[in-house]
Image 1: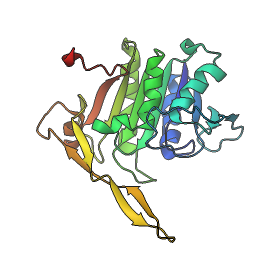
Image 2: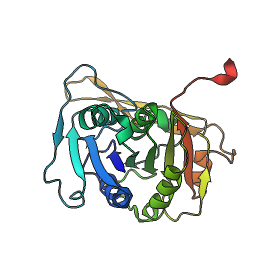
Image 3: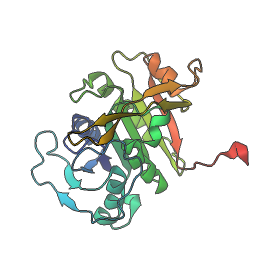
Length: 248
């Protein structure tokens, strides 16, 4: 089976190195990832500049057994480049897409901003099974040892399922000891006070992203945020279909 690994933290990140090692027993691993971090890219695609795809002949320790490609595009672009440039438009040659391991949570409303999950949604658009893995810690050198224990098991279980067209999986890991796995829905939440004004050396005002996360249903026990708060891995089936069916 051909397995495609990507992320939004850049091709040399700790998360992608971990996934390569864990995915090698499942098949032949291809890495196509951005040349630098693309956090917050969502499912953004490149439409107004050329994209390049470069094979890395000597990718370094941890990537020797994978075919590694780097692009100036986004994570969503990585999927489109893989399908069209590497596999000649035949998405059926890709058996699985694995994205991450993202540094930081992609639970709740964060999924709409996530480049990690943006890549998975493009895979789902093409009927390719896809899993996005995220760890709820933004530190550059996060300890992924707990998550590593569960990723092969979760991957095997989801690959063996009959994945419906247009569906992918959003998997988030809590920090620290893990006390279980929970199937969840996306928690209703939003960000407030998101931008902080500052002044540069020339006296111009600019804005940086900050913000407070507001959980709108903290007592709901079936959400991804509840699972993570209770030290459980959250697995949320996620769809490319954004129709609000209750309004029809």
